[in-house]
Image (spheres, rainbow, N blue to C red):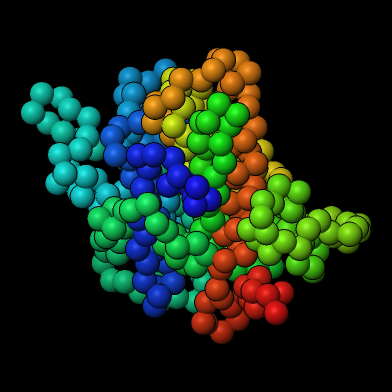
Amino acid sequence: MRNLITDVPGVRVGQADDRALASGVTVVVFDRAVTGSVDVRGGGPGTRETALLDPAQTVEGIDAIVLSGGSAFGLDAASGVQAYLREQGRGFRIREAVVPIVPGAILFDLLNGGDKAWGRYPPYRELGYAAAASASSDMTLGSAGAGLGATTATLKGGVGSASAKTRAGITVGALVVVNAVGTTTVGDGPHFWAAPFEQDGEFGGRGVAPRVSASDLAIRAKGGPRENTTIAVIATDAKLNKAQANRLAVMAQDGFARAIYPVHTPLDGDVIFSAATGAIELPDPHYGMAELGMIAGNVMARAVARGVYAATALSFPGALPSWQDRFGR
């Protein structure tokens, strides 16, 4: 176990970014089509192909999931991922036609100081293709891929990941890009809201805040409407139908609530995709599903904190400091 979403067999991650642009793309690629669903909680989401993930819809399998910077321009990234997968012969087959199924979500990073004067067409399609082509079992946390330009209310945001196993040996992994309107740490201190769920000092080992004051609970927010979003994928090797996959995404949202304060606001576009590779049967459809969702919330909370903990600040005037800048020493 590497404490990454790629601990789930058959799941790979690719990332591509542009430092001058201060934005990028993160892609979760599956070795074969998997059962997927989605849960949208934020008030300002930007998504692609989420309607077909409803349990009532026909298409059963998805080939990849795209998380991108660039606001609505970043939705182009999925076209690049589609192009790569089509070259590999991947996709939903209708006679001789092959259509890769690639849902996605975007975050707003257009005002972070990077050069967004890209001309007629945004660069996200090519970044998506490059990210998909680089997919592997390894990945960089922090300021990489879609997390390169991400921020929170007080600190630099980024890409995080974490994993765990159920008692029956089912693996659950989370990948998240943290660009929240709220905070991931308590007040002005180094303690993460997700501290009770930390494993083996994975985000600094500072433990829980000794006390939480009234001022710590006051809202601290960045930017304006539609400038914030936390987007994520929760994956497992359990065998789930689309309704169960949807429930997994719903329960994984608890991880956002444990790690980000406040969350699911009108100012965020929070989205969690779920994916189940189907390798292992649930030991029980009810209690087994409850444990799976419980662990999904735990690993998602840890992934959020790891993303902020590993991030490095952008090099533009007025850029927010990273956790390492402020507390690492």
